[in-house]
Image 1 (cartoon, rainbow, N blue to C red):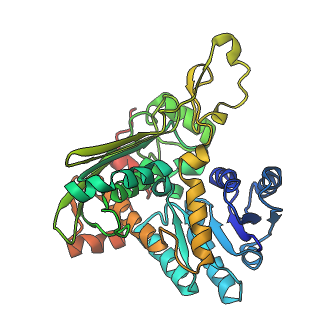
Image 2: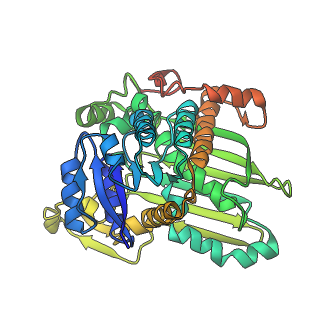
Image 3: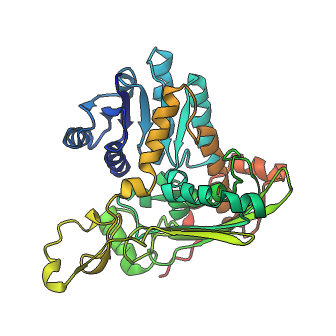
Amino acid sequence: MAHFKLGFIGAGFIARFQAQALTMVRGADLAGVCAPRGAEELSALSRELGIGECTVYPDIASLCHAVDAVLIFAPNFARVEIMQAIANAVAAGAPLKGIVCEKPLGRTVAEAKQLLELAASTGLPTAYFENQLHMKGMNAQKRQLAPQEKAMGPLTLARSAEEHAGPHEGWFWDPTRQGGGVLSDMGCHSIAIGWYVLTPSGKPVDFLEPVAVTADMALLKWGQPAYRKRLLDTMGVDYAKTPAEDFATGMVTFRNPETGQIVKAQFTNSWMFDKQGLRLYMDGLGPGYAFELNTLQTPLQVFIGDEAAEAAADVESALEKSTASRGLLVVEPNEADLYGYVDELEDAVRCFTEGRDGKLSFAYGYQVTRLCQAAYLSAERGRVVDLTNPAANAELDGYVSLIAQGRGGEVLHVPG
């Protein structure tokens, strides 16, 4: 049986991470890539990893005609144009079986709606890549606690956090290109996993009804003069002129439509976690039971003294976003699997082969975008956003945060 052929649109950080994950997925190859930068390097990596003879294609149309599914791993600001090119290729006869988009689906509700509608026009199955919902640890706790949930009732409080010292590329730091700051970058993860944790077993991922969002955000580290200069020198982004938040926290309130039970999902995200590296933290509290997951609690640690530290060639070989090369260091031997990338790829390949949407569809990604933008609106206006209010929902449809407009100085404190 022929392997399912995947085509990557984009060849940056997340595409390389997904290539690593693909080494653990049976029955699928990386068959092609289209990207303005890094395509040749990704093609070489594919051959090195043994995941396929990855051909570099000059445009999206030719890629779509050569593969079974395309995966959008390109920057946020390019998503609508890319999705339009995919839709055009399908209309011209490209034999695709599915479309994947990495989070977030859009920088605004309007952009997410455009991607959703363009995907619908193709008639193809979709998969929204939100890796944390595919993490083995998160799904294991659901299975393990299913008897307690049945006897005592579902979880009522979820808390989630994703934190590290900051993104790899300049566009991530630029709110006008990325769509905001840390909330847009990582808040979508934390909001989605909180929703998932609270969802009763056996129910769809969008079963719980979002009813309210409240949030607060700030520029705490990267607005300080020394760090602003570092950001300008290394990323070409000036937070004195167009700042974005490096810290965000908030709460999403959900209602169980069958029982009326109110449950809460708290989220916290920052680009100022100057510790071991990337940390994902989640916990859930129910009546008489609970769980906790922390990706920095690893069975492997190493120690590197000062004399040996100069030998470290790449500190991120041990842990994504690692900020240290000496001392007692956390090592995650298989981050691609730990973070859920392997499982989300497996899910997309299996579902597309069967002609159906992935576990998370573009429609779900659209709803997560709405919740993220409601959080921006809440922080900007200093009030709770009531998602049961038609006027609030109508406002979200056309909302673009001041931070995303490049006017973050109006809502964030930037030290002199």
